[in-house]
Image (cartoon, rainbow, N blue to C red; front, side, top):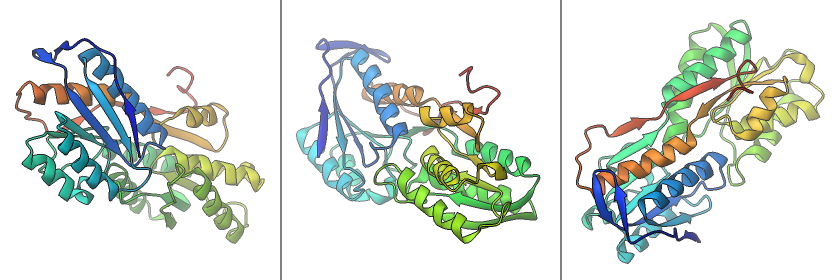
Amino acid sequence: MSVKTLLTSAAVAIGVGGTAQAQEVAVITPYLAQPGTQFYVDGFEARAEELGWAVNVIDTAGDVAAVISRIEDVVTQGVDAIVINVDPAQIGAGLSTAADAGIPVVGMDAGSDPLVAANVTSNGYAMAAETSVYLANRIGGAGKVVMFTFDPFPPVQVRGVIADAVFANFPDIEVVDRITPDVTDGGIADSRAQIEALLAANPEPGSIAGIWAGWDQPALGALQAIEAAGRTGEGIVITGIDANPQAREAIAAGGNFEASVAQDFNGIGRTTADTVARLLAGDELVQRVIYVPTTLITATNVNAQ
């Protein structure tokens, strides 16, 4: 099912590198239910409007395989470029179809692939290092830690790899569970249920020292579970990544959710649009992975951001 947004614009727009005729661009993702993806798309659409493009945003609602047929559809329709927010390794047939048609594909917080001209994203390695080191230091380098990961999506998968490495560097930290939550509704509900079950199985105060999440929705679900269980006073430290509005509110409240990393979602969306514009103007891209800066958010700066 697609959500179409036709951006009102002039027939001719000034793009990167000069004057270009109005373009048609498709943005395809299974993850529009995620706040981060929504913000990426908003930023992309805002820049696309400035460039005078018609943008078709297509949400496959969690169905990764459906991305392939949607790519095939827009190739048949003759779009000028395609933007994806999904693991390229899982949609190879669709990428091949676009390549055969000469239509460039750009990743917006996706992953690298020979058939993807460039991927615009945050540095997941750095974000995961910041939050996992923060958590390790806050619990004094000792205790049982739960991780929320999502290996099917490359930007989150690499975060888990780095967090694993950081925790392994602390001999007295034990990762007792590595959870991949159901993200159909964003991930909060299932993450809460998973932590509720884990807390019930570990009733002793201090039995869980920290919860590291590869993005904010599981962290928020974990916070809800801890609050519902009446265990907020145990000092269980939670960290996330994205610093979405709910996460910022939780951090500002001074509870168990202590840190997240703010991605520049708008910047990722706008930079993706500018990257597409460069490709449509015939530029050769030397840098195939483009990082947009991030900021660690804690109680000390949450109100300043």
